[in-house]
Image (cartoon, rainbow, N blue to C red; front, side, top):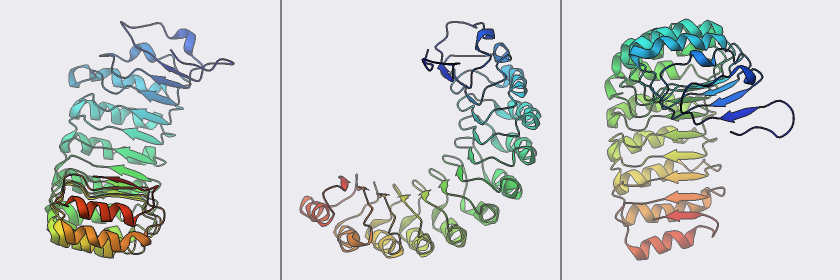
Length: 331
């Protein structure tokens, strides 16, 4: 158990062997009961002062999700982590009932929950209740085109959103048009995670204008999307507008030398770039040498990751020597 030494307790992490009496923790502000195989949340109902609650990686599944109604007791909650509970559509419907009671919520993690289209359709109906939300994670929920269209139609209700993670879903090039329209309404967006979807080159073409409009974007992850060289070239066109970009991950997209060269050209104005990840892209000599030529454009770069490419050792040494010593080159 962790808490501040003086004054009332602020944060506690519990490793449980069974349900405990929380009546003595009514002033608690932060509670982490992740990875406890919990099936019931009712025993937490007296913790009305909670602002941060982590109940990730438990067993609050469809058949036990009635306990989600307990969340309506936490009216001061700012940060809720429900990831890895497989709540499914049933749990999503019950979570919708609690959202009117959590209007101060700023961060919501629902990744790895088997939500799918049916569950997402329930959740978006409650977006107006949590309009102050700043961070939303919906990764690994089997969300496809129908879900993408549903989400896009309601994203404007979350106008303060700064972080959106949709990694490891089933978003394809077919739904990128509607998704782009929805995301463009998020004027405050700083971080967008699209790792592990099926965007491909065609989808990159549809998202290009969307990315260009995200003038505050700092962190973009489009790794594992089968972009190919043509998709990387289309992405590069939008990168020219992202002058605030600090992190870019284009790993595992088979962009090859052609795509690497295009990305370098697109990042000519990215003077704030801090980390560039290009792992597993079949990049060889020409792409690596373009990175050498671009090194002076990124004075704030601290990490360049090139693992799993086809760059020979002498060329890697040239890359390493072209950047200041404080830049970590991951080979």
